[in-house]
Image (cartoon, rainbow, N blue to C red):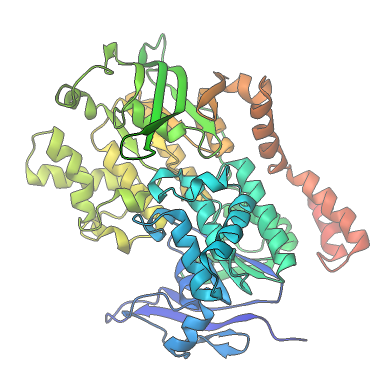
Amino acid sequence: MSSPLLSVQDLRIAFTQPNQPPIVNGINFDIDQKECVALVGESGSGKSITAQSILRLLPKQVIYPTGDILFADQSLLKASDKTLRQIRGNQISMIFQEPMVSLNPLHTIEKQLSEVLTLHLGMRRHEARSEILLYLDRVGIKEAKTRLSAYPHQLSGGERQRVMIAMAILTKPKLLIADEPTTALDVSVQAQIIQLLKELKHELNMSILFISHNLGVVKKIADKVVVMRKGEIVEQNSRHRLFLLPQHPYTKMLLNSEPAGDPVPLPDAPGILLNVNQLGVDLVSKKSLFRSQKKRILDNIGFTVHQGESVGLVGESGSGKSTTALAILRLIHSEGHIQFDSHPLHNLSQKKLLPFRSRMQIVFQDPFSSLNPRFTVLQIISEGIMTHKKCSRSEREQAVINIMHEVGLDPNSRYRYPMEFSGGERQRIAIARALILQPELLILDEPTSSLDRTIQLQIIQLMKSLQAKYQLSYLFISHDLSVIRSLCHKVVVMRAGRIVEQGSREKIFTQPENGYTKSLLSFLERSSYSKAKIRDRVIKKEKKNSDVVKWEDALLIRKNH
């Protein structure tokens, strides 16, 4: 048998500080040629640290007490900086979890993608442009030619993620490390990206290390699944065997952590808290020194949010969901009417808006870019209290401790900085910062997209309990329809800056009228087959191929279920 493309052998990763336990503790797994291995587990389990160790991207304070990482039988932990530079980007590429942090905010998309082709393949600018357009189109960027001159902040979260994917595959690497590559994408684009990665895997004979907390995505792409918890591998097996016959209790818990249940019952005769009518937003771009061009990116948006109600805002990336939230909060210029608790906000100055700010809070999509890296968690979470409430330092700190407990964070970590937390933990810090003011309306822009299913379930339950206790209203922006179905009373479907359909949760999920809504729901249905259907399908496959799961196991599945 040929040796694996990548082999992680007894790897331990630790900080140089004394008396610190290892972050990753003696893990072993292989990735074969043209194989996709999924690394799954909760936030902080060591998935991303393991991936970054492959390319030696961790700071100098991190050491490797034991073990090695072999790529094509060559040690990466012992390789020189010169050797690593030849491997990085050429033979091994990586898609990072947070594109806003990874992309240079001062450079256009074309310049950043051109640098990859110029540096690694020596292409000239005109050659690079055609290649860039090809790959931007392949990852689902609409009107790719017009997006070349855009900066990262001018793209939606999903579009930035797709640019990162294009950047990683431009050099046709042997191994692609994908760290949560579909986190910010809606279900339809998610399906496109998974299909694209599958095609590239076969076209380029490429192997993939796929890091994700979304087991629905893992089920579609992985050949083998490695489950991590607290820096250790608790189980690894083929995809079919692991999903059908999980052995470890933690794996079983992950597989049973899909969002479920109904929204919190509405209060009796709830009043209208937020009323949005004929909302419109124009994007103004300069054509020249004396000419500018207007493009309508949000048009005739209208909906209501009642007291104690959750309204889900769904649609593909770039449909205008986040822009709608920013316009409601008066963080960008807009036209139309916005009423909050019967008070018109659309004509108020920034000074007169201040009393309403504490009553309306937002959790942004990308926690790393919305948290000040120079502030401790204590300073970040208490920032709103310092602005809107008068209280002593000890009272502020106690409020921070209480809210950290509520969102599942250790209060003893309040003196640490954002970079010292995992992606999921940073999102919980952002949620705590918004909740500490006890707002009446909470706008949540993809608040659970970076969380693994177990933590996502905890956050949803937390939101439900807070909503029942305080009659909070939520405007919940998400591409995860299973989360929307579990939390929201009403659903508003957006596409290309317009509302194509809105109605009650029951109506939208059982009797959708618009073709686009139906297509979104079809992806949900496809990704949520019942276990019985999956079992029957695999058992049929067993008659033709006994290598996937042993026939005796298939009989055992049928007997037990």
